[in-house]
Length: 527
Image (cartoon, rainbow, N blue to C red; front, side, top):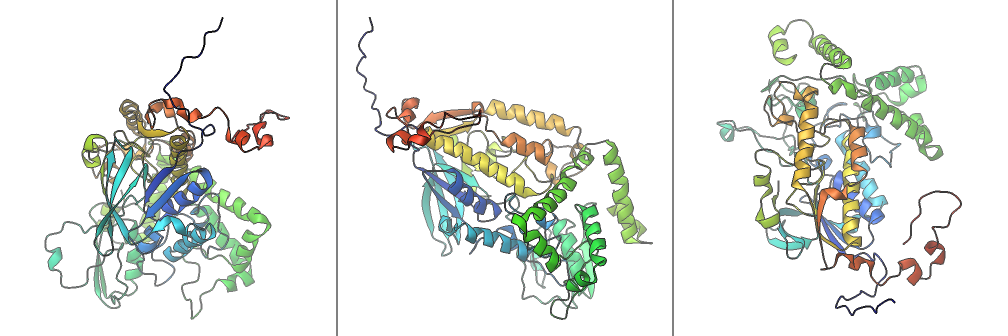
């Protein structure tokens, strides 16, 4: 004989199963990550508030800030082919050249932002200066500074840091630099009103910005000095075979050739040594038939990039061949003489987590990220394009997208299951980083050489993903929730089951309610 059900003090919410709790999200930054976060939130979340705080006056991120000069076909541009430097699901048939300049990339981001009506998610001229976790509330308390210098406060359940891996530029520590009488300009804060024609110019550094600035400055400077701290490799351009083949094919068409020649109004619009200008006919082809030809072209470019990952594996045959080819190319470009030069050349905001722990202390001496996306002791926190991520595996756009989708899946779980705090386990994170270190013992980055990826040491741990870009995307597709500790908003974790009915039943959407009946074994969803 079945006994009677005992009375319970547990209150059953009068709502359908998994009615999502309202969740408040703050994203730091309005570059490619912030824009995509706003888009993905609209697409993947149901009951949320999102604010993207940006210190600048508008969107664009690195492509808004980096505007160093373009006197010809060079200047500030992206070293990834333009047709893959897009959000993976939204190509652009209108790129003007193989490698897009800063202004064009900023324009692409703005068109995406406007097309998908994301304006309401952004607050500009507002800098995030700190975020502190409050475990009792399950919230980050976020301190903000407006353009008037005044501080205000906001809060969120989930915090996403998309402020950029190298957003806070600084001058090198050089004695006497502050006493220099001429104009001082940083590539990340270029002063357009400074006249450089006919001047003696010194460029400090030999990295990617210097590689783009120096060719431009040498055209106008009376004298040019380049100060490099360490040797520099300049490898062949990405997807160079496709680049060269496009030039050959274009050269056979007199009409297309005339379409891309320089003019008095636009003298830089011509094919340079490592550049290619798309003709109106090519753009028209890319735009046809739901962009079928464009997708084919984009995939060809991406395959050319990802198929060469093996040259990052130390000692592999392609690695040996690449070293030899790159050295020969650099030697030929420098020409005869310069033997001594050849010997030298050819070889954020404050964040506080559980119990007030500062991320600066937690990540001292080295970062301890989990899947390049979160870290122990900082619940409900996600960082995009951070340590152990895609800093050298190819185009950042696919990995940024994968990290944001990962964060959205976690946030959706927090909302659906009434989760107060979701924190990755420290033991799991340590094992992951041990694995990454072991993998890099066989990568080129693990070889004994000084590298930014190793905190400017010769033998430190490598702060890159342990594998290819495709490997990273696959790993991030499915969150492994067993790697996390959960604290729930209610004392009974099962209150998300609510009143015993689903939204489809309550709202009378009976076709949706019986979606489990189907003609073939395909996934189904009950709302």
